[in-house]
Image 1 (cartoon, helix red, strand yellow):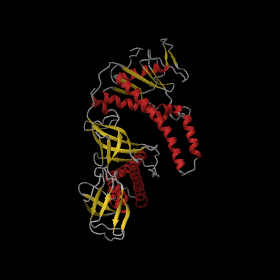
Image 2: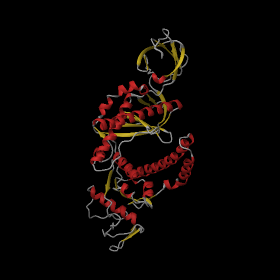
Image 3: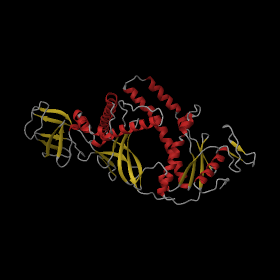
Image 4: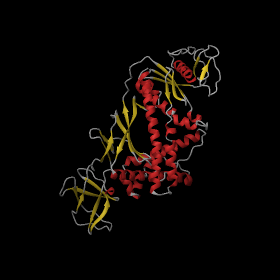
Length: 480
């Protein structure tokens, strides 16, 4: 089976025989860049709440459903009413409307399916954590050689506004600068400016024409404004990025995200060509996941369960006690909230690294990979095992195995887990065993196997039958 057929059965996105692959990198913005990014997030949060309220009011008052392009058409008027929106790239604002539209589509889809979904909610302060550039390199460009990310409107500083009476501070976010001819905006009224005047180092000067102050009176003709340290404003300020791996394919979109601990990341969605499969190994494996051991392989190997959350429970309890003692709305509480988030982040990092390492090793070692198609959400209804099941992260491990197997040209199959722990892998005899019994003794053929190892052999047998590589009646013997 070639790579294209394999990728068609996975979660990977395909567009015209190409695959979308995401690359995530850590960003290190300076204080000024971080402040500008946070301002853009707050503007997008305001727009998100405004568009959500607009849709709700249209239905409650007029029984009218607003469409995506209806709200796109209102963006110019919103910029006129709220000039600070001009500091956000236009496609980012359009993407906010797209997120609203997707939220309502998901809401109506769940309603049609008979579920009880929650209505799209408003975002509180600090609860909007990402912005998206849908058409890279428009507004966002990665410089691989310089290891910097250039983003539009993240190089803006503050400069004094020269008027007839002297100097009056005016934020640079009210202006938009481009080389070689600068286009300058003050509020909603456009003005023209030409470069000129003395230049020292990175400092530049702008010669302004017919600029008006708050009183509407123009200053003296050809007033000159110093623009100090305007480095990189024409193409966006350069933000330091850690390129721990090369970028593959053609970048199509980029998302800037702020984590709950204040860290910044950029994720590029790239359009990649067909992957090149790995060399055949001639080995097959069935995997049975569990809680005592994370996974039991049909080769006889066991992967120990690391229980990362259990290891951090004491640190988490201590951080949460400190958080509960801080007063609401104080900076101290905000800092202690970050400590709690840092514990959860550390658990997620360790769990993700564990899943990546073992999934990569399995994909490199086996041609056929058979796993259980578990309904993890239903299993977590068991209140005694819910925390341990969430800590094991079986779904994350299966997802990583799925896409890595497809990218490497391996055959991945998720089988029905029914009776895999009750059937004998040698003779097919079925018997019910309690969870406390970890040994499977077969009364028919007399074989005695570890319960999880026996289940992994059954999973491999069902997987081979599903792929058409073995008849249903065949049995998988230890060592095969």
